[in-house]
Length: 287
Image (cartoon, rainbow, N blue to C red):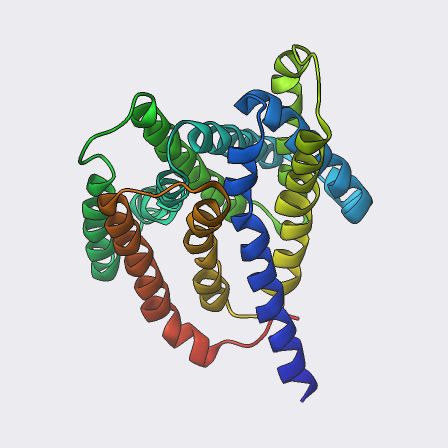
């Protein structure tokens, strides 16, 4: 019973993390600051929150810690820029293509063969990706889509780098990635002449809950569930993100973007389920 209870807590932890992550789109849309100004407060506050939660563990570093921090900083910045320039659906779905690039590049890095299921997943996902660039794009939306793509590519690089590094050095990458963004964005924040309470509480929420607390919930859950379960539950983020934006901001994604997003998420989820099924039957919990 205790074993089951821990597993249920893990599932809930990953789900809460996905819901918190999904809040980013709506708040970024509502905040009137520029993308780099948002990034300064969002990541500066997140770094401080990480310091409070994880304390000395974030200072365990090696070479890979800072390489991965650089990748993560790029993801954080490009995500906000994409959210401001294109629709939330486009931004989050395009970032969610990260597993595609992992499937492409990881065999090259590890010098392993491409599996048939992975090749099929890549082909299907690229078809879904193509749909994001169909139809009429408003000024700036094409650039926003490209930033979303870059966020996805860097997220894949970050994921591969984190898998290459030892676990005790991984929290440092998240912490220093946020620090790096805050440093890069500082000159833009210095241009702010007035910071309204509305903007302040929203950037604070992004830093504390959408990044730091969400990560804490995810790491808590990941220790108590199977990787395939965490992967599938995490897909609630790209589903809920544009939904919150539609409810709170009135933004309606294009039909082709919705179809493309559904194709990508379905392909990645099915692949995670199929490839993880045998491991799910054989493996044990890690706590």
